[in-house]
Every structure is written in C-alpha cells, then in structure tokens.
Image 1 (cartoon, rainbow, N blue to C red):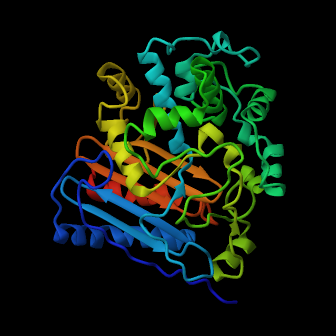
Image 2 (cartoon, rainbow, N blue to C red):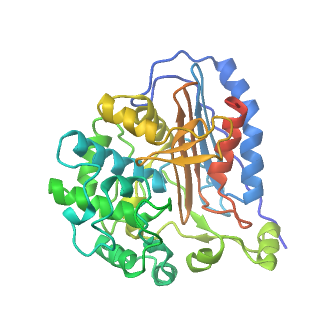
Image 3 (cartoon, rainbow, N blue to C red):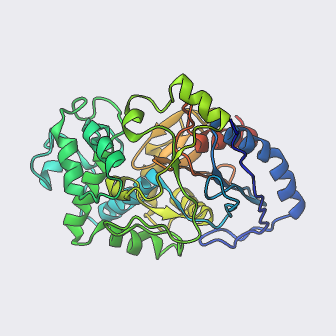
Length: 397
C-alpha cells in the first residue's frame, strides 16, 4: 500500500485593511509570523487527522492578519492551494438569506411574527410557523436533505439540477419533527422556504437579492451565488472531496473500520464531488467566496451597521448571544446567525467543502477556515475543529 502524502504549500500574507469592508489596521510582520507559529500546528494536526486534501485559513486580530494555504487542489497532483482560491462556502449562505429577510422587516415589507401561511399554502403547520422560526430553526419542518431519495440521486446523478420547489416538496412530504417553536432542529427546508417568501415579496430571485443587497454594497467582488444549473467554480479553485457516499452519510459519516484503515493507509482515496450541482442546497448553502471576502463579510455581519439598522442588528445579535465565551463548541442559534462560544457567524458543510466563519466583537478577532473535505473518514468537521482550536488559543475564557 502506498500512503497518500499531502504536501502543504505555505503562503503568508501580511497586511491590514486591504480586503473589502475591513478596518485599516497597522500590521507587524513579526507579529504575523509569531501568530502563524502559534496556530499552524493546530491546522496541521486537524488536517492530518482528517486526511483533508486542501485548506485555507485566515485569522485577523486587532493588529495582525495571518493567512495560509495548505495542501493541493487535486489529490495526487502537485497543484498547491492558494489563499485566494474560491470555495463553496455552504451554510454560511444562510446568514445572507437571513440578512435579506431582516432588511425586508426593517422596510416594513415582512414581519418576524408573520405566519408562513400568509405567503404560502400547503406548508405543514404553516399557520403556526413564523418567519422568525424559519430563521432560528424552530419551525419543526423536516429537512429535505434527510430524505434517502435525495441522497441516492446526488450519488447517482450529481449533475442533476434541483428546482427549489422539488426540495420543498421533499421537505413537506414527511411529518414535521415537532410542533412550531417546541424545540430547535436545524433544517435546510427552513431556508429554502424563507427564500421563496423573499422572492414572492420582492419579485426578485434569491441570486439577485443577495447580489444587490449584500455582495455589491459590501464590495464582495469575489463572492457570488450560482445561477440554477451552474455547477462551475471560478478559477482558481480546488476540487472538493467526500469519503463514503451521500447516502451512507445519512447514517454516519464515519467509514466502516476496514475502509477507515484503507483511507489512513492511502489505498482508499476520497471521491471527487466538485461538480455536484449545488442546486440541491440552493439558498441554504450554494454561495461561493474566498477567505478574504468572508472575513470582510462576517466582520460587517456581526460588528458593522451597513446591512441592518441598529435596532434590528441588536435584536439579531441578542438572538445569538453566546451561551458561554469559554467554549467555542457551545453553540447557540439565533436569527440566521450562530454563536460558537465567543465567535459569531456560521459554519457550512456540503459534500466536498467545509467552512467556518466567525468574528468576536469583544476582541476584534476574525476566523475563517475553508476545507476541501466535509467530514473526516472517522467523522468530525475539520474547519470547525481548527476554528475551535484557534478560539481557545487566542480568546480562551
């Protein structure tokens, strides 16, 4: 057996205030180097443990930016990832859709306590589900991506284009998990449904709404939402990989013991799922971005005032207020915003890519992690594990 050796390409960029929307801060080359020495072992340990082919990390403190790329864009080739590569950023998209919803609330065109049935018939428990409960994942609606027929179709026909209405039919075809607002349960159906409401109110598709209300105003020139049926990534970009299958992951992302041993020995390689059509996740996770753009976005999302007015911004931050600043794995979900201990933002996990995006307004620390593998072969989300390590090291209690 020949073990897979992942070569790490290191690119350290020192400079402050160059990315869109960022504050202009002086940066010390020495400080950046020291920060890299502190954080790099965390990254390498997680990437090695989870057999991640490639990754980009971005950390910004009050006076330092450290960015570094790891690994190769394509398994088996010497094609180094760079810090400017484009990634699919998964469910960080939910913060964008949620922001548009809150903007419409601020404009008086939507209310958080509006029942979903006001905008759409046929939603299970629709008269009792509010817009707020779509945002904070308390609707109880079945998450369509847990339907085995969807997972099988993704494995068998990765190029298939999924209309949002098809996804909603899958979500509505199974009984709700619970009554509205009875519990918390993450469901992609919530965001697909919310996007359809926003489109109905505005007469614009979700791609236009995100572009015109978020990407352009914030100067996020490297962030986009794909047109329906467009499975391409801008260049340069890495390939995305998956151990196992989408169907097997419904039971567990962990490989059987014999396959796990083969993966660690290098005789079982992950499947290239780069060209899986992102329409299966749509408004719940199809956005594309870079580390620098996500860093600028999350700083404005959490710490700025250009997206929402002060009252709504305060309400959103309060809804996701950290349960504990000492533990980044202590997660709290609010109005389309998530807290991981001290870091507010969101993570994302889709076949081929795993993302973490967080900002701590107390310490002014930004953390972005982009990986080309959703789950390690033994389970575990690599981007989150790296980000949690950064948070514990830089912020602690």
